[in-house]
Length: 273
Picture 1 (cartoon, rainbow, N blue to C red):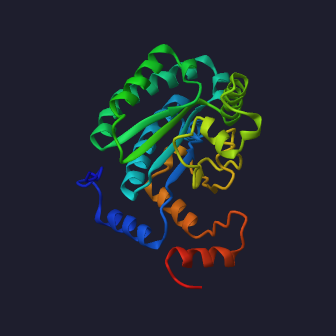
Picture 2 (tube, rainbow, N blue to C red):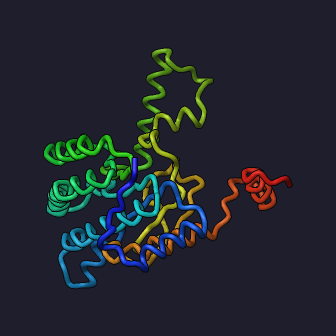
């Protein structure tokens, strides 16, 4: 299937060139995960209400999705609402859920038109019924799309994910479907909420904080981290490009030494070492 560029008519020549140079420069991450932090701080710095910061962040989501799809990223996972976020003031939570509904209704057709599938992970049944219904409908409408998968982590935490995987595995051991001796990393991966996607190659966090905030704890064991001081509403495709350039500049050794990585790359390229 021929892939449609999301912003052919809007995209500048400079942007198209930048994306081309990035693809030539090195490997584009297959999976990018983002902790979208700083909406409230951005709003405060600009004399606005917190919900206005969240609304401004929607534009960043849209531009990030577009640029990642154009670059050939296969999976984009966005930390939209954590398990811990339920502790926030009820008024803010209510406003966030309304914004989620509005965004799903506005953006789903755009995703569908551009062959992008919407996915979600987390304790989704904890969402208000109308939010859950809209989310399920959006995922259903985009289920057949193949260009890129955008996953929203909603009511999600890494500890919840590991916990629910352990419960599922324990139930299978109890029923005789699995034996304790058969449990390994692959089995655990298969029971995580992210079972259908590869581990993130690159994790981006906006807002300048140096912590993972209970996000994809198991999955980010060998993920490259990129921290920017920009608040999420300020984050745009140029920042994605900088993060990918930083990623491409790093050597991912996975416990090996540089010489092994070098030889492995030559072997994969069919060169005798």
